[in-house]
Amino acid sequence: MSELLEKAEKALAHDLCDHCLGRLFAHVDTGLSDRERGESIRMALQFTRVMEDKDSLPPHVKCSVCDDIFEMVPRFADSVVERLQGLEFDTFLIGTRVDPLLAEKEEHLWSEVGQDTAETIKAELNQEIGKAVQARIPQEVEFATPDVVALVDTRFAHVDIDISPLFVYGRYRKFSRELPQTRWPCNRCRGKGCEKCHGTGKMYQTSVQELIGDILLAAAEGEDHFFHGMGREDIDARMLGSGRPFVLEIRDPKKRHIDLADLQQKINENGKERIEVEGLRSSSRDEVRQIKQDSPQKEYRAQISVDGKVNKEKLDEVILSLKHTRITQQTPTRVAHRRADLARVREIVDLEVEAFDGEDLTLRVRTESGTYVKEFVHGDNGRTTPSLSELLGVPCSVKALDVIAVFDQ
Image 1 (cartoon, rainbow, N blue to C red):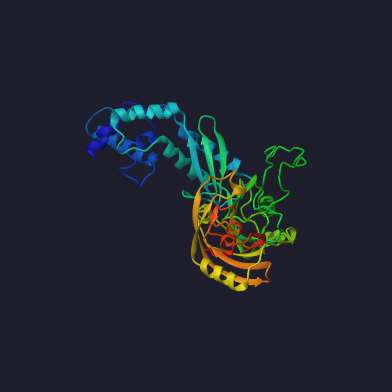
Image 2: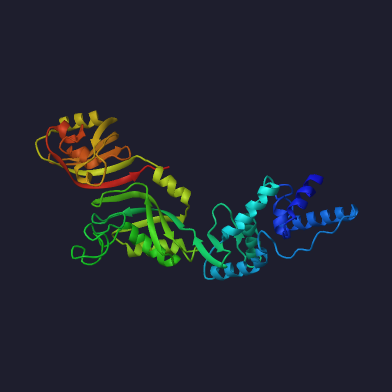
């Protein structure tokens, strides 16, 4: 105790408020606020001086470190509450920008008395403003993933609000062969609008993302939406079966409590014959990471044109040889302009002939994630090997492709 009081007396050679005095010993006694701790230490030091027949401590006039900024905490809290009006949220957190001059004064004091038991003025301001705000609103403080963060610039009592995105999980089916998964800006004007895109700024009028996201965005009163899918299918491929998992991210939502069951119905009505969604529920940034990292096997149904004579025995022999085969695929010609030219090894997990009349073949194919199925069929001029065309000895091409299963966890 005597060591603590000696340090306090040395610190009080400067005029300190109770906040700044108590903050020097924040990690000595964590059961009190910094102000309460400072008040207690000041009283103990005053009592010791009286007992030792020494002069009383000089009265506090103005803090030499913080300029008595903690007297402004109620005003800061009022500014935060005002800025939070109109937002729907359950949890919040306070952050601060502190005048660099105050931080410099604090560091100068630490250089004299030590900082091993101290906490920063920024940390205490966060705590005190947070407590004052919580006394005025029903929402709770949350340190890990708050819905909103109020950043207080203590120099001007200005408050910026950072709203956490709203995440919605679901699965979609796509029935159109003319619909991209995500927004596709015009490759000539880059979204500005030109003759090629008829002023829309887009290569395609709409997308899976927009058919889902525009409705959710309006309900949440957000600023924009972003689509995170577990992989993607080609524009001309349908997505069937139980659908493809996705998370729709809404930036800066003013509303967080939206009726997802009702919105799912609206999306399906608006997207009739183009898309369908199911299982909409609240999600998180962690689930976005999981979806982007997952690499599930997929199953396809390919309608294939066989340009040449192939008998059923030969087809069965080739199909059997391709089961559980690893193929090498150089980046396909059709995507080489936007992807690195690499050789990728992928497994053909299973194949099954569903129909064959000598010219038209319907093939069910289960593959490792990332397999280019069209190239597996036609070979891409030898860039995929082995391929169905190569082993059958005749050109083959995909007339229509459907994703019929995504084997996610």
